[in-house]
Structures are given as C-alpha cells and as structure tokens.
Length: 160
Image (cartoon, rainbow, N blue to C red; front, side, top):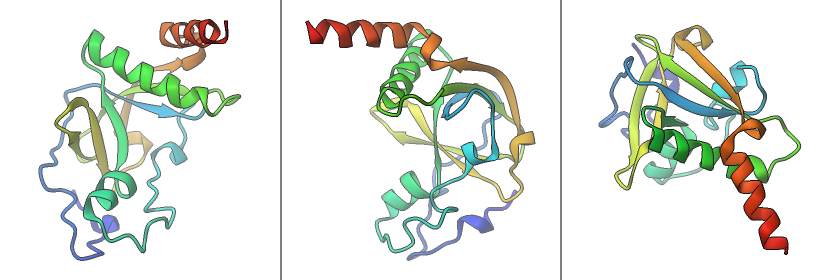
C-alpha cells in the first residue's frame, strides 16, 4: 500500500503517524446524495486546497484525510447521525445520506482524530483506492432518521 499522492509537503508532515489499517470495523461517512460517487471520497488536498497551509494538524486532519465515524454501537451510531443531521440542516435542500461501509485490505489507513471523541476518525486513502475498496452495508437517507425528526422537533419548539 503506497501513499505517494498524499505528498510530504510542506515540511514533511507525518500524517500517517498512529494510522492503521482497519478492515474489521464499520464506518460511516456523510455523502451528498443517496448514491456513492467518487467525489464523496475526494480530499480537499486533491482539490488543490490548502497548498499554502503550514500547520501539520490542519493539513493532516482537514486537507489530506476524509472525516469518517466509527459505526459500531448504538451510542456511536447516534452520535454520527446527530452530527450528519446538524450539517445537513445547514445545507438543505440536498438529499444528504450516511454511507455505512467497511474498508477492504489496502484501501488506506484510519487514524483517531481526537482522544475526546473516540468515534471520529480520519481516512487516508492509499494510492490504489477507488470505490471498489469499500463494502457498502447501507445508505441511510438523513431526512428519514430519528435524529432528523428529533432535530426538527427541537427547531419547531424554539420557534414557539
């Protein structure tokens, strides 16, 4: 598994430090439509953003990796859905969804973003990665979830 596309610039940030391959756990990622597309797994770095950034944490966590959430318990699943619904609520009328998936061997590496949130990970794609490296378990339409319904109920209560 290679990571040449990540690049070492600037200042040789070691984004893969503490990263590991995980083909056992399920993960989730917010996607912008109810079908998985290549763009759903494109990093900001690949889009040419942040090339003048020099903070390694920002480069590794925000630009070179993709935000994913562990999907392995009722608690982590609920936390992820609440996060996705909150983001979606600001981007309506898109039909955002949550992709639930597993990684195949050599797809890339995952890394815990923050010790305070043991469900939030970064995914660093290998050079070989494409959508065939994902095993999709489910796609959940956010507007059909309990998290969305609870969010809407709270929003309407605030208006009263």
